[in-house]
Length: 176
Image (cartoon, rainbow, N blue to C red):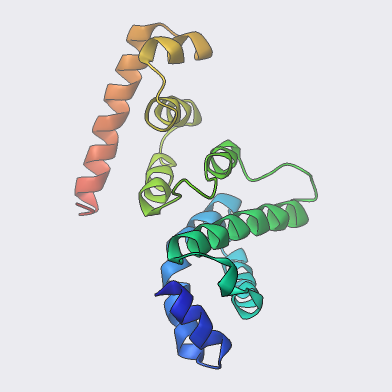
């Protein structure tokens, strides 16, 4: 379906680009939020437009490959924008780097990961790091404690407390 939409877009159907935009809107909003500049959202959509105009869909086996390619392109472009607007060579932040590094063309960077990082952004940085290590990188409580110089019990306490906060937030916002 994505490949078909891109082909139809390249053949003049501008409505098909709306469908492509909808598919990538969650990622683009997430990247804009991480850059902390929602005007960048338009630039990311424009970049998606340019890529879709030029991309040779024949080089991709199926929708999943082209989808993953476009996601990586958008992440790279958001890093370029971040550098441009912040006049430095840092990239967005560690969770984007980790997602990028873990998003090879065979892995999935999907809405659930985006939602996870968006949700934990409400918590303090240290708590975010603990959650990321536990649920994304699959560290044990003991390994997290060693890495962050905390006891295993402290890690467990922080995890339990943060999960209660996140659960309350999900229920309050009627997300589930």
